[in-house]
Length: 136
Image (cartoon, rainbow, N blue to C red; front, side, top):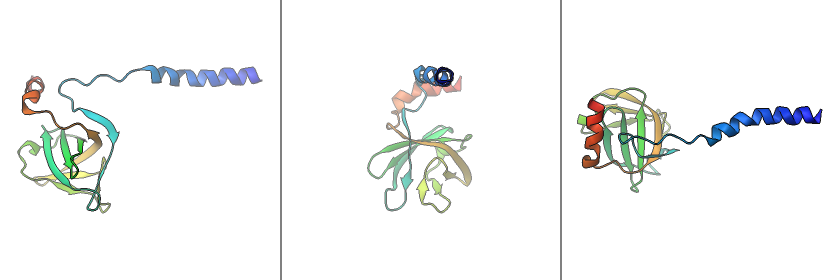
């Protein structure tokens, strides 16, 4: 009985150990340099938004009051984000911007699916090759 239990347990753990051994794919040059830790900005006590930068229509870098950077990915595209002069944050009463938040851009609601800690956005010079690759 003990031997069957040990074999059953080993059979259950084998797929988990194989999955843990797989390394994550390296991001390509056009992907954000996110650290991958889901995070949030709490308003107004914890932090405010100091700055932001569009990642075309697919995401946004947001800088917190203390200089920390976050990257938010959208559920779809967020039209006109590249041309917006201001953004709004819809938190639905919880006073927190996280992966469940929505940004308002020129009247359009842009739903986030991820909001992670990130390195600062790449410079315009570094982004040019990625932008050209995305257009092709």
